[in-house]
Image (cartoon, rainbow, N blue to C red; front, side, top):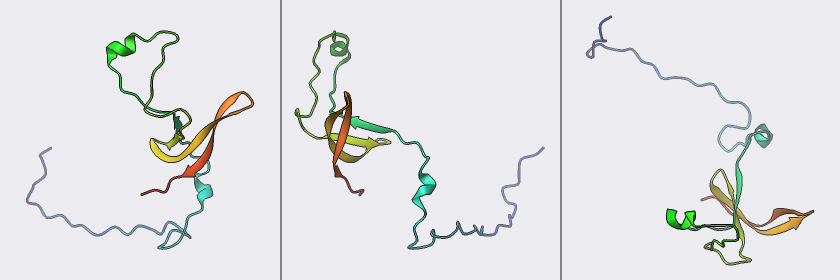
Length: 107
């Protein structure tokens, strides 16, 4: 089989995609329930620190790692790696949780 001729003429026509249904046209809103079963990774970040490998290897039981955030400061709530809210750490029935105090607007 020989390679295609680069000087050959190709007939092409624009593609006509079908409408995606009600509520998806300009100004419309799709039903958010369509996404209800989509899994998202939710992370609560207390703070961050950069460490050299030698310092990391020296950590033992009882070691304290200082974070870049003050005690009592709000924690960041991330969804798929993007900060979407801030909140306070709370204890509910001996489990840790986050009380959302601020929802952040997307840029």
